[in-house]
Amino acid sequence: MKINIDRDKCCGAGQCVLAAPNLFDQDDDGIVLLLNESPGEAEAPAAHEAAILCPAAAIVLED
Image 1 (cartoon, helix red, strand yellow):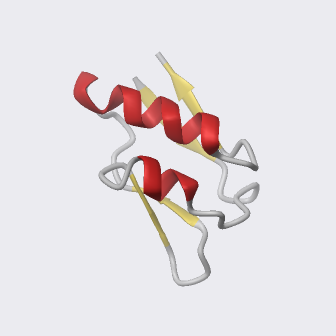
Image 2: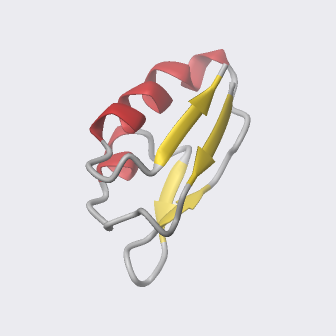
């Protein structure tokens, strides 16, 4: 799996951080920061949840 983020789309809701704190963080302006672009299988459910919860659709997953 590979995670791609579009920081320009991010609205700073923070749902990704709540769903997958090992994969995402936020900068001082609340914009998403990707901590691990190629997580293992154990992190896949959290990555999928974060992508679904993102109100701006700023997270795209590639399998």
